[in-house]
Each structure stands twice: as structure tokens, then as C-alpha cells.
Image (cartoon, rainbow, N blue to C red; front, side, top):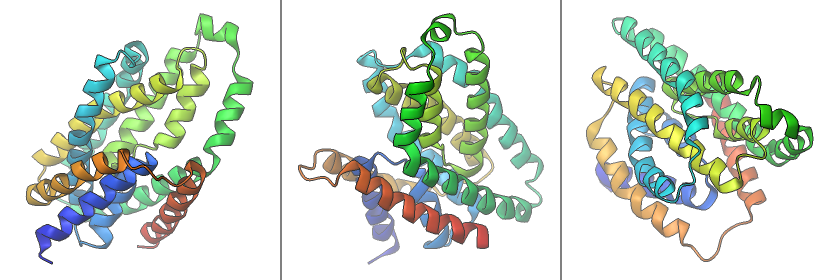
Length: 263
């Protein structure tokens, strides 16, 4: 199998996993590009960010048309996440003459992000239950401190996505659910999370591209495979139970996390 076909097959596999499990492609694609295909950490992150941004466009348009996105919460997240993403890109630019520094930092941050995501997947149900029990409706109505905390969550997500391409969606979703339990129903929670991820991944991806961190031929091959993978998987009649897929993906992420931290 030629190199291009291998990337197409990898895109199909990751797209299929995303369609079946809902786990963000960055958690799988970036380690795949690094560990199996030998891409440098910076190029793996940059390529995956452009890959993720492209695949999120259609979903965001669809959610926006269906009026499922909470734009007020999205703006609060963006106030923190966009500066967070830009700050990491500025650091990349300042370190452009010392690529070894970036390539040492990214695997370790990626390992931590994957580990946190894996734990979040394993504990997601319990965390959501805790969030539901601890929610306080009067505070929900007055909001109070919530705009500031939402901005802080945005900063953390912006830094994490730009540095590792992993959005820590499992924990970010719980944080939003805890902050806005009455306001965000399940479909609005997912829609707002994906819509917020689009501008971050796009800004971070373009920033990485200007620094030469995107492998365009690999990106094209991945997209060719991922789009049919997502479509086929999302329409699959037979699916594993959510709890089973969540545990399996979490185990994989924990193994990869250990590999990244040991690198």
C-alpha cells in the first residue's frame, strides 16, 4: 500500500471512530501521526488542527441552522480561548529558531492532555451526575461568577488545543454543563462545544501553517478518508454501547499518554 493510501485509510479509521464514539479526532490522529508515521510533534499538531477545523465546518453550519448553538456562551468561551490560542502561537513563533524546544514540550503536554481526556471519559457519567446534583438554579438565573469562569475555561481550552490539538472535550463539556445546567440541554451542549472548537482549531491551524507546521499532502489524504468514514459510521446500524466504547477509547488514550510522557 502506497504512502497516500495509508493516510487515506488512517483518515477513514479515525473518521469512523469519531462517528461511532464521538471522541475527538485530535485525541487519536495526533499520536497516530507522531508514533506511526514519524511526523514531528509540531507538524503532527498543525496538520491535525487543520484536519479538525475542516471536519467541524459542516457540523457547525448544521447546528447553527438548527438554532442549537448558544452564542452568548460561545462568545464568553471565545473571549478566553482566542487569546489563549494566540499566546501559544506567539510562543511558537518566538521559538521558531529552536524547534527542538517545541518538539520536546509538545509530546509531554500531549501526554498530559490525553491522560486527562481519558480520565474524563471514564468519569464522565459520574461527573455529569455530580454537576446535576450540585447545580443551583437561583445562581443559574443570576449567573454571577459564571461569565468569568467560562472565560477561564476558554483560556484553558485555547491553550490546550493550540499546543496539543486535543480539546479536552470530556472535561470541557462537564464544565459547561455544571455552569449552565438549565440553559444548555444535551443537544445545545454538544452544538455549542463543537461550534466553539471551530474558530480555535481554525486560528491555531492557520497559525501553525504560517510556521510551516502543516503537511498539506498528508492533510488532503486524511480528509479524503475521514469524510466517508464519519458518514458511514454515523449511519451504522450496529454500534457498541456508549459505555463500552468510552472505556475502550480511554484505555487507548491512557496507553498513548504513557508513551508520550516516556518519549
